Length: 210
Image (tube, rainbow, N blue to C red; front, side, top):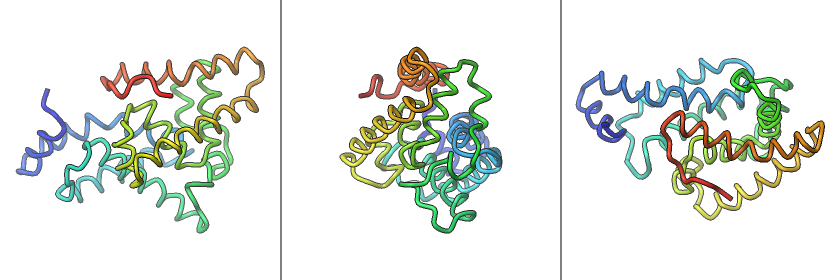
């Protein structure tokens, strides 16, 4: 299969079909990126992300994977979306659950099990920056190096933030769970669901994370 970088080179050379293939390859992942972070406007934010990618594609320097470059754009689009509505928005403190005041998100539509819906609610209770890191690490299988490129911080900072995020998520699940059995099941779901997502999308990722 043609790699992202090969498709990008062909696209830069003027082949629009290569660009279309590249966009379609990552469309589901970018939609998933926004689906658990906004209540409405998911499709609009996905379109803005790919439009920004098209407009800046010649600026891709190849320091990290194309996926990391694309998710960095998506993160910028997401934060800009919230800054337009909230002047004091800070992704290190504000969470999707407080910004949209709604327990539901488009991502709930892909969840047919109670523990999955609980996990989504727990993730939305995290500060958006930490939620982003957890979802990109576990759902999309980005490496610490790729995450560092997305967030523009050292890899050591990524490791410490992921540890903090896991601890906060555990605490949120303990508050939100309606029974000990549901709590235990939801703890197992993060790994299992992430593996299922990666298998379905053909993403290998880093495997089991701690």
